[in-house]
Amino acid sequence: MAFVCATGKHRRPSRMKRTSAQAAGIAALTTTGVIGALAAPALAAETSAEQTGLTPVISIDDSVAEQIDAQAEAQRQAAEIKAAEEAARKAAAEQAVKAREAEERAAREAERKRLNTFVAPIAHSYVSTGYQAGSSLWSSGHHTGIDFHAATGTTVHAVGYGTVVEAGWGGAYGNQVVIRMHDGTYTQYGHLSSIGVVVGQQVVTGQQIGLSGATGNVTGPHLHFEARTSPEYGSDMDPVAYLRSHGVSL
Image (cartoon, rainbow, N blue to C red; front, top):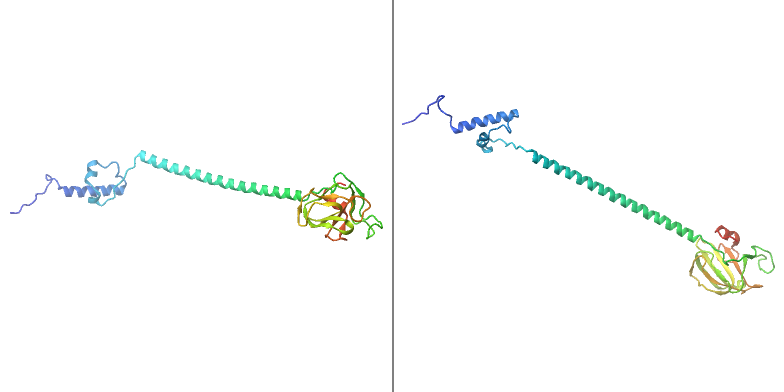
């Protein structure tokens, strides 16, 4: 015997029908943007994602939103701090480079001044015979250098920085020293009673290179000093002008 389900207002729809109708209502509300916090708990409980196929709507309360904002602010501040640290690092590196360059310039300037500092070959003395003075005493007929008054044994100084190229007997000059100066010129010191340097030795301004005397072709003790363009005899230039051009007062 078959039973027919009666229909009419008095019969309550089945659970499946009710659920389907509720799902259709939720879809309609979702389309209009109304669904959210207004949905009834019972309806939300009955309408699962598996039954309707709809994506659940997640509601974020104020505390979660504040946490997200705080996290974003912290990240922003961290990025600003990192950028500031990087800028400070670059500025410090640039400052270090500038300081190093300034030190190098100062060192070069100090070295330049050091190399261009000259002194007289005999301290507290004077020129007793001038440059190119004429006399039969000299084979050339004139004086190729200048003579500084000095008693035997007076300290003779290198007038500037250079390298010794000759140190020994020089014929009419007696015991002599010839120095190639740092600028390529040469200086000669003659009639020494003793020599205190050797060929190849580096000398500095004011260094003792020997003692004055009366060796060679002389009439008395003194220092014969020459400025030359080469180490050879005959390449002489005015010694007074040479020394004065390097700041030596005579």
